[in-house]
View (cartoon, rainbow, N blue to C red):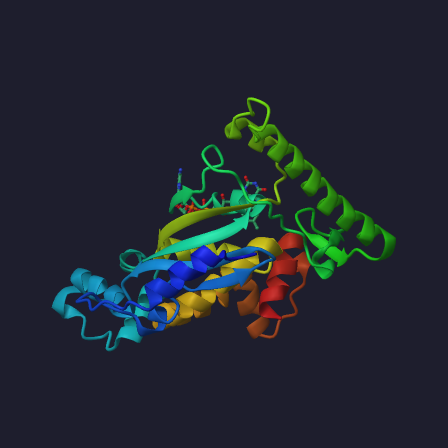
Length: 301
Ligand SMILES: Cc1cc2nc3c(=O)[nH]c(=O)nc-3n(C[C@H](O)[C@H](O)[C@H](O)COP(=O)(O)OP(=O)(O)OC[C@H]3O[C@@H](n4cnc5c(N)ncnc54)[C@H](O)[C@@H]3O)c2cc1C
């Protein structure tokens, strides 16, 4: 169950009591505030709070440029200029606070993004719910043969059934023993902080995660990318939808320059110039390694 009835009641209560404010409000974000969006089988993301909007980015940027910037005529143009030139601090003026429910093995990847503030559900203090991520059959894939850090075709037949059985059975058994060890029914009961070591990495945890827009874009650039693991990518994809409504101009620039753009090395730029002049450039004459050339071909089609 992604969201509990208590959590849903809290969301309904919060959304039914709008309060007037003098602060900047992003209409697109107001529609998302507090609501939970399901991710994977039991997870979700929801916005708890936010600060700033597209205008806040421009307001901060104009402090650095003063009155002299007549060349940048509108907010969207200014935001695109900032994104294009890696002038990142104005984007740090916007912040978002998310409540995320996610499997522990996804949390381990997520927590590597150090430029956020995190407060996680305590399994020393509380008992974790009996909820495990079990992949959909089409996500139960074999090890990739071309990428050591990726997956290939979905498992099929007897192997798929056996793997699914292991995942479900092992999680259930581990949780049964966890519950039995911490029980104080007729025994002292093992401390929760110790018993939790018996739990598998597909159990769900929850945290509040607060980050500024610049560092959120960095997170999304890496985790909404096709090379990111599917199970973290689906969270990043859901966050992208919220951010697109929150700061449409900044998100548009991010999509254009970061998600859709590419960085070319000086060797690659040299190859493009030679190609434009009509020269037939190959990997052997490019000065690039096979891997670089493959990625370069991916960029130029
Ligand atoms: C596809 C993929 C595969 C990965 N594989 C692995 C792996 O096999 N093993 C592994 O360990 N990790 C792996 N990672 C994690 C990766 O190395 C980064 O730790 C993670 O993406 C967070 O990036 P970051 O450090 O830039 O982000 P943040 O921690 O949010 O930092 C943002 C930026 O702040 C600066 N910064 C923050 N803290 C410091 C610091 N202490 N010192 C200097 N600069 C700092 C850096 O410029 C950094 O880019 C992988 C990530 C991806 C996306």
